Image 1 (cartoon, helix red, strand yellow):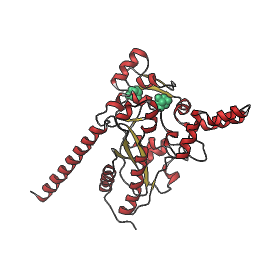
Image 2: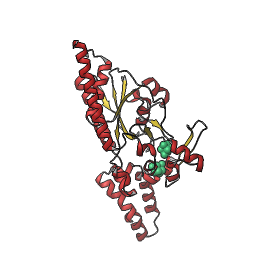
Image 3: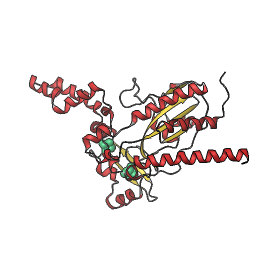
Image 4: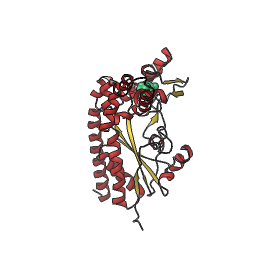
Length: 317
Ligand code: SF4
Ligand code: SF4
């Protein structure tokens, strides 16, 4: 029989744990809401039958410099998702060790029975329902008004903890995007996507009215696992040994084998051009890693001061 714990205290302890490990945002998604939105087979209980809570963490993106790097370099260094996974993995062990409830790190992987486009769980949906990101015009990439673009990871646990609410307001579209849209019919992300896979409209209330995302065009541009079957088809269709050699060993295709051999995550990356021009990603107050470091230190100082004041008040000092 597991020991009794105060759920609010446990939640706060988990938040402190992930923030000390480098997460920027932490929240809990309401499982009933997830069950209503996620299709059958992709709901939390489909993965962990006795799940009671869905915890989600968000970590910040790359350095400020990475956004100024050329496209090829940004494609290699733009993501920090492995950090989110590491923190969530640690959180699952932490909950089991400290509170004694079974927990799992939610695999961010595709469902092996459903091909390369259907994830086992939507980490994005968990984060959205937990209120640590809102869907943007840029293919539903989640954005946060304070932290900009983050990478997310989730933990399922059998411990019942209080859920959070989704964000009340969506920071996308940014006022400057609305202005550009009124002038040109496009927001910056739409305009600078190299394969024009984003489109949509902004209503009279300056909120997103419609968003369309051609995920196939985006994946062809930025996710090289999509390119591997094409390389193999070209090889099979080659008319002679020279053409066959080029299909396998041409400079662009060599890079795919190189990335596969070293296990580079960039096979699954974004091209980032929509986020390079996104004012929220670029100017949110804590999106800048330097400001973020100072801001997080300030938050820790404030939290410690508040805890000291509370203790003093309890003692009647
Ligand atoms: S990642 Fe690249 S291809 Fe995909 S939507 Fe953004 S800009 Fe377009
Ligand atoms: S550039 Fe960013 S804020 Fe502007 S519409 Fe696109 S995703 Fe939204």
